Length: 212
Image (cartoon, rainbow, N blue to C red; front, side, top):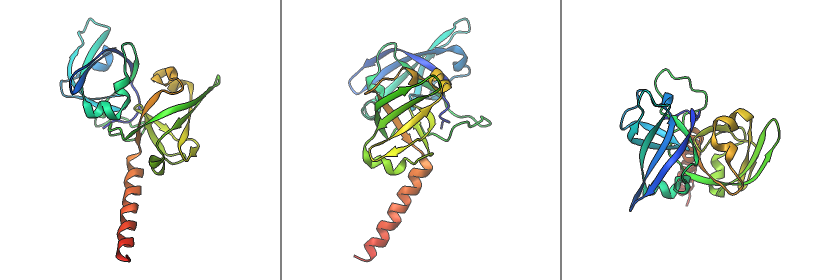
């Protein structure tokens, strides 16, 4: 589990496509790799991945983490579009006693959205995202959403998408500051909202079936 509070921006060292998977290598400041173990969970652009290898000697400033990304994950997320030197959002898994500054995030991406418009000013940045309309019932004004692993608040909503209103701090500590129109972003909707909507739909479907 994660909080959606990005700890650092990592840099893609390489992504080697193989038959049914890809080997992803990300460099990150060693401070974020302390007490890391093989098998640990790390969110890369909001995707929960398992550490298969890492190098972080005490004298080094930057370490490297290796992940095996299966074909299903590549198909459902924007990790398939990563290239060398791309910046990715990095968050280690939640531990007991950690302050939850965002919201509970599973790291299981449900869909992707495309940036259709970006409007930057000195004080903020407004981003318009387009998403498959079937997901809009889970995306509510002022509700939680996770974008590339970042816990954010939903702005205005439309039939085919929604707005994000970002402060400079968010742009500085995440990769959203480098995003452009037509870029694809990973989406994880709020799990509580998802569960409530699905439960209501199931109950209504059961009641309707009794009268047909």
